[in-house]
Length: 391
Image 1 (cartoon, helix red, strand yellow):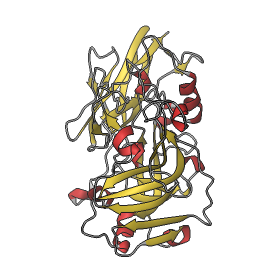
Image 2 (cartoon, rainbow, N blue to C red):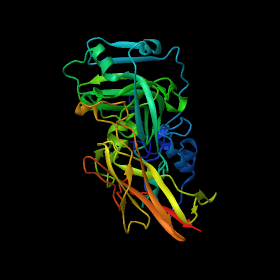
Image 3 (cartoon, helix red, strand yellow):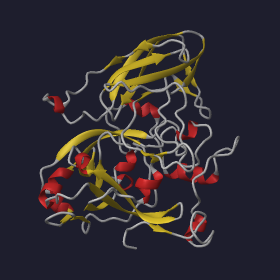
């Protein structure tokens, strides 16, 4: 394979259910009353979310950070890994890890969220990785700013996008492919990192060892892992992960709109203690501290509101101070793309209560109170609901 997308014979291909397409099913919606399928369960055992109690950490330990791996984790060695920068550049580059590490390094604290976070809560449910609300994490990513490599290569005037190729290879909906995504040059020349470290240590295998892309503010599909190629092109990239997979569609024939930046979301650390099977929460009467994290890829979170009566009433929570935005000329410690801690007091009374939190960002975007449905189950930032029993 040359790394391009290859359409195989299959349900959506020209020759019926023969070939690789016969084991690669088209996207579908779950039938009414259909439970989680064995295929979805298999995905869920490979890809884990953040335990919500781990929201207490400013920086998520790597083993608790959410993971989504489309195909297999590649067998990678840092010793012979090479990153190429080619296409519409004046000086093509081939760089090993030592060469990348010799360049000035920067560290950004970035919150990553899977575009499919919340998918399993939709009705009808798109059949895929069955996320609830835990597909998120925040880490300190260290590496080389992508713009440094682009400057060294010298981007030709005709280039409009950078295409990023990972080493992970598989078949999806009848298309055999390496995982590939692109970014507009204006985004690529911003705060994007070619990262080789997570929380001060080499990337774990499941997080892209030895090299990955980190795109602050964008959903996780843009953060190409096991990065091995950057190609500058003169037209928008139309590969599978760009033109087919990650698009907002409301019916099967809809060409859709691209999934890009993270919509605002607040999550609460479930208070009290849980039942093992149901995860139902139990608290005692009296003062309870409600707290969690909030983030958005469109702008800083400016407000979090909390409900303890399933949305009948709301009150404003306190937000920890935010970093100054360097685009405004103020200082920054590299945390502008990270979540913010929030907290609010609550006096629990006997009975059952439904808790939730709602984030609003500086652009005026806020979390919806009704289901934001689409066929792929993307960007479902519906307000979290936590039933709590006060005994």
